[in-house]
Image (cartoon, rainbow, N blue to C red; front, top):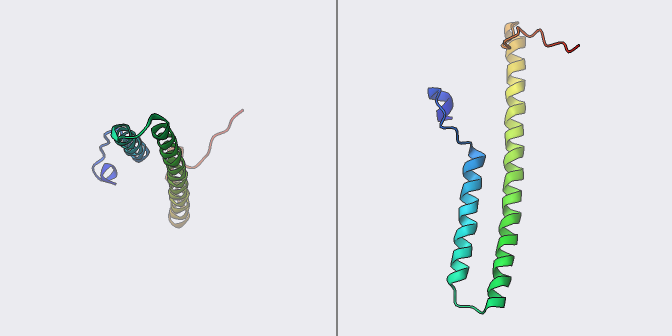
Amino acid sequence: MYEQQNGQSNGTSTGTVVFALMCGAVAGATVALLFAPKPGAELRRQISETTDRMRRRMATTMTRAAGAVDDVVDRGAQAVERFEQFTGSSTRPDGGAGTSHG
């Protein structure tokens, strides 16, 4: 939202930030498990279970985020169509003429 208001972008997408935070959480959990006093086999099992759980959470979160982005894009396209119908003009650079491939 800030990027749209002042016309500047730092080049970081929301998906990148979410992914980085989730990777940090996984790394933190792994380090915490490594410093816990447990036998090797139990530690490996717990690390495996924790990473599997985090992987599932990340997949769910990324699927939801992708769905939300798709919804926003669809609503934006519908808003543009309504605007064009209301004003009788096109907001497209080609004047709404479309492109022909041939």
